[in-house]
Length: 72
Image (cartoon, rainbow, N blue to C red; front, top):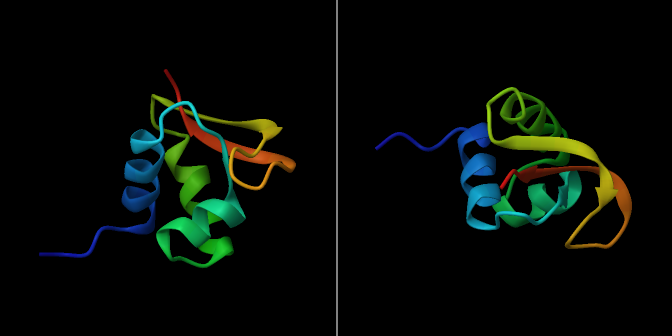
């Protein structure tokens, strides 16, 4: 089986935690990737319907940052 891409791993992580905001650093730590990779994956993920990227409080670290979440 082929390992999931960072984008696929991030999307699955966000869907499993629907409605929660995650900054790139917290998402990266949670799925075991580099923060810069998480940034690129988040930018790609939010091109898909069902994901939102905006400035808000991260549900994990509590900082006001650019976060990504699964919509709905």
